[in-house]
Image (cartoon, rainbow, N blue to C red; front, side, top):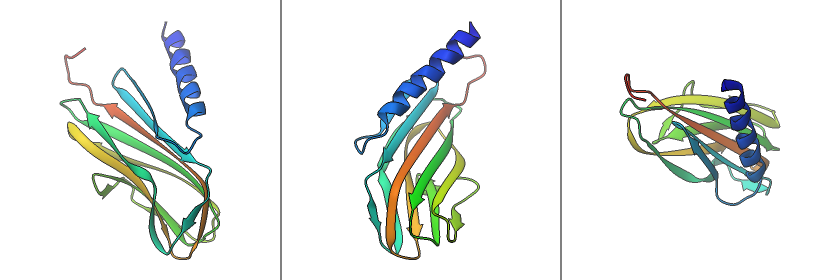
Length: 152
C-alpha cells in the first residue's frame, strides 16, 4: 500500500512539474500536510547590479500548531558571473544562508527554514555584481507541516 501511495505521489509531482514550465502563476500542490509551490521561467530576465526578484513573492499558510519546515530548491542559468541567490521567508534568509559564486553560469541551491503557524511570504532574490541576463530559473518551495503528537 505504501509503495502505491509513493508511486501516486511521484506521478502527481511529475504531472504538476510538467505544468510548471511556463511564465505564469506558480503551480501549487497540497496533500496530507505537504504543500509544493513550483515556479519557473525560460524568458530572459535582464539583470541590473544589485537584487532582482525571481518571480513574485508567494504567500502560504502554515496550518500546524507545531509550525512548518520549508525546503527551498532553486536553479538558475545566467551569464552574469559574481552572483548570489537567496530565498527569504518573511524577509529572513533560509539556512545555511545566501550562496555567492564567481564565474559560474549555472547555480543550484537548497535552503531550509522553520516557521510558526500562520501566514508567511517566500521569495527568491538573485544578486549580481555585474549586469547581464538570467536565461532561465526554477524554484521549488516545499512546506512540511510538523505533526502535533496524538493528532491524526
